[in-house]
Image (cartoon, rainbow, N blue to C red):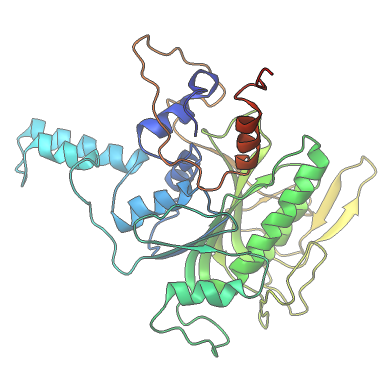
Amino acid sequence: MGKSSKDKRDAYYRLAKEEGWRARSAYKLLQLDEEFNLFEDVTRVVDLCAAPGSWSQVLSRVLIKGEKYGRAGWQEKQAATRNYVLGLKEERPLAESLAKLELKDEKIKPRQGVKIVAIDLQPMSPLDGVTTLRADITHPSTIPLMLKALDPETYDPSAASPSAPVDLVISDGAPDVTGLHDLDIYVQSQLLWAALNLALCVLKPGGKFVAKIFRGKDVDLLFAQLKIVFQRVRVAKPRSSRASSIEAFVVCEGFCPPEGFSASLDKPLNSNSTFTSTPPKSSSNPTRTLRADGCIELDLGSEPPSDDEDMEEGGQRWIAPFLACGDLSAYDADATYQLPKDRVSLDPVQPPTAPPYRRALEMRKLAGGAYGKTKMK
């Protein structure tokens, strides 16, 4: 998050620097948590494609430090104000309570036994309580490294499965977009499959998986495939995500692999993989059918849908519910807000550790300076 382009960025970009976040993407995870309560009863989390660390920063503040944001923090502030107005007894004065609720004074109900592991190919600056690994999420050697980081004292390399599985796996990874939408969507889908393959190896039954997706052609097939191993699959668009972007987030809850299924990065799943065992009755293997009108139907079986599932008329195509996250009164990521005249430009919270453009900066410096200028001979 740079300093010189503040006028060219949206409100969340500036707000992130004011509130101490490493990147504006922190608000995406916060708004997803407001909608789906992702952090409920969660103590063991793996953050994939974590750099520069904004999502890991959210996990550190919420799970380890016990801070509250969004709707939860607002509700407690309202409760403190109401108790003060009604004259109810409190252990501390209102100002101190509000200062605590504003996360400026002390920790609030930190959770016990929290383990957070952040993995990325790029180096990441350290965070309180977060173990960072520089590893490839597609390589089988990453699994033992991650399990050892989660349980350094009790890790058994000979065990076939982790002794204490993970509650939540999140991934905000995305490729360097080329502008060719079909190519970008394909590369993103492969990145999501890599994150899913790792999640299948470490998630506990009933665990959660959250990952970024690019909505494009036949994306409903991806949702149907996720539905095979998760009880509930929904798609969300946080308010801090620009409406002009095709990105969204798939939120999968209730991890329930088919009986006899064994996950491994040595033989990872891909978009053409099928399960040899019998999946649950409520979510059988999907089959694709091209209708005369050009629409693609996904047949998930003849079982009746549950209350939280959407089915087209005829029960042949399962449609993932799409939800917009974030308070409507919050900032609009696509809107332009006028800055006050006395505004002071802020320095980045965390400068880039190893930016890919470092070599370009060095070459530009040798050439004579910024903006393409060269030394006069």
